[in-house]
Length: 193
Image (cartoon, rainbow, N blue to C red; front, side, top):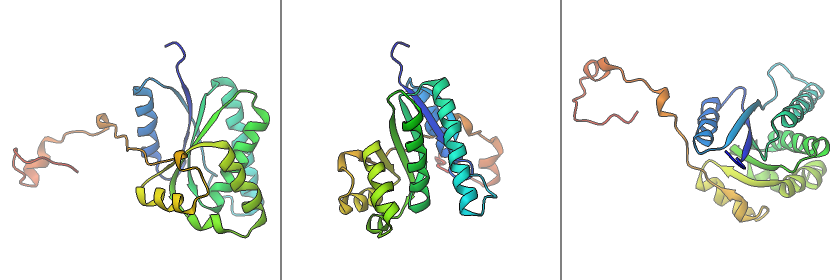
């Protein structure tokens, strides 16, 4: 496909994996060229230094992946809170520093803590949040409530804040013929879950 948009998609390593894979497949079905990278610190790093080194190591793996895939968009599944936002800042900073092509960043927040916008911490308030504000093209939140809370804080441009629809890969579900019979569900009733 000529001029096909390329999305490098961050897959969480512990939580929300199926949701992220559904989104990736949904983007591919819409005609985007997609590749993926693991995005989260591995379990087992308990010290701050260990976690920081893991984030930097993962960022460089992403940089190498970006050079081979040449994405237009880097889609990060994360959280809008102190640790997640700091990880996102480090990752985006290093990618911008060491990758020569223009990239748009999208962050999907699986949970948010709007209070971080009121933080008095110098690094968070003066470095992390302003950098994310400048470099993230679109923020995706899980609910209108989160979106409204973020918009009320009036820190990010409201035009960058969206609530996406969930993608569900229906081919992952199997119809079990005995299900209705075992639960005495009549054939004319719809089963939603």
